[in-house]
Amino acid sequence: MKDKKVLGRLGEKLAASLLRRKGYKILERNFQSRLGEIDIVAVDGDTLVFVEVKARIGRKFGLPEEAVRPWKLKAIEKVGAYFRLLHPETPEAQRIDVVAIELDEDGKVIRQELIKNTTG
Image (cartoon, rainbow, N blue to C red):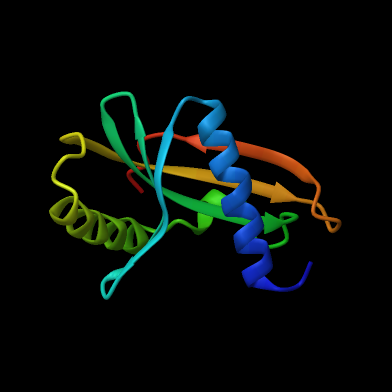
């Protein structure tokens, strides 16, 4: 699986499935604005959650979650603020979660991890 877009779509599909199993309600996938993108917007209990999904094949370039840099979290916060303007009915409390997914060369899941309240 060499195509990054295919890997990204597969990662987001797997992440959405994991989040649903954990009780999250998915509001939107790939929410975009001129400020950037949020992979998944969901609600977990009474908290609005902006989810960054990172999928990688193997560990050659490190763990997937290590690719979520502080600048990316700041960008998610900005896009999240815009989302809230468009959707004032969403819960007031919010956080950023990361779903890290490791796959083998055949696209089989090696590890899936939900990391709540990521701060960088």
